Image (cartoon, rainbow, N blue to C red; front, top):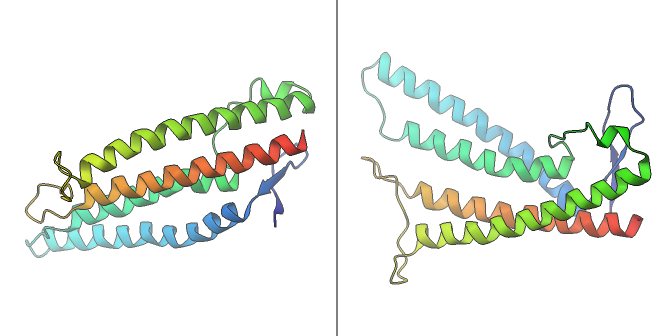
Length: 181
């Protein structure tokens, strides 16, 4: 159940990018997240008008835009991995033959998998501290502002989930690359 898609690189043959079912799902969900950025912009405009035109700023505008943008950025890593649109330094990669490129891709994906595993572990420690007291009772970390929503805890949990998803993506990509080798 995989689909091959193409990335257009000017002056080069189009490489085939393997997309798993998870990658396609993430790419589709990305369309929803793009609207969160739009909504964040609307909240910012509302806040500016409320503050400077009516002299009555909100207590929720800044924290809401911070939450929405943080969720979008946390999702962005997984989205870029799904679309194979992450930034690459190709000084060496472009100069080696295709066979060596395949090995470099496997190495890069294996490093990404290890990186993801370490970040999942680190993310869990952040989630645990933001969701539970040292005694183990549920208590969500809040912003400490006048509104004081539990957005920091929500952001850390979402980031943790997205790190798990990215690690799974790296694993699936590594399996696919090893099968092609």
